[in-house]
Length: 101
View 1 (cartoon, one colour):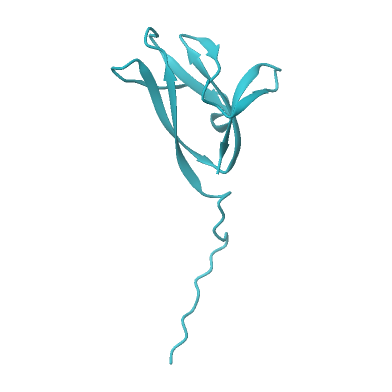
View 2: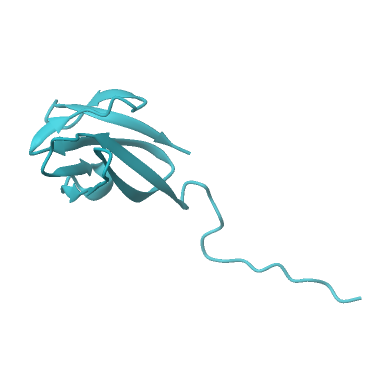
């Protein structure tokens, strides 16, 4: 009987190391541009896509943990009413918080 060798890698599987697709939605039917910025993209605004029903969306692959972010609706910082909570960034400005697991 032959034994099966278990493959090992330098980094074993961990939920903390894996990425999960997260969908962000912002309702701003009159906006010309909606962006999202957060600790997951070094607070660099990323444009969201507009749908016909007034919602804007973007999928971002995130790892396990708590993430801080905010929407920019025509340049104005806007909190996400669907977020897990509200926190403060390094500049003491309000940001939305989301738990990714």
